[in-house]
Amino acid sequence: MKDFWEDGILSTKSRCWAQGMEGWRPLHSVPQLKWSLVATGQPEMNETDLAITVLNILIRMCESYPSRFGL
Image (cartoon, rainbow, N blue to C red; front, side, top):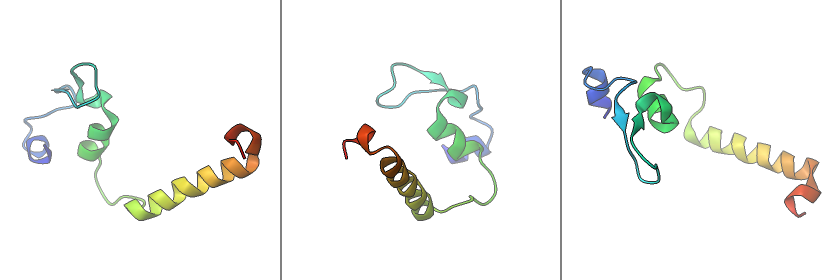
């Protein structure tokens, strides 16, 4: 897909479908595709750093609201 994007065969209006979606939608409305194709430059975080950040946020949420998370 990345090659099709770079060659101009795909655009943000190209219709896409993936397992779990109810029907075909424009590429710009599928976040996973939009950000993986449209994004340029260096990412702010690598996958490991992003996972650590997300887990830290979840831990803080659980600590702040223990009754909401069954703790």
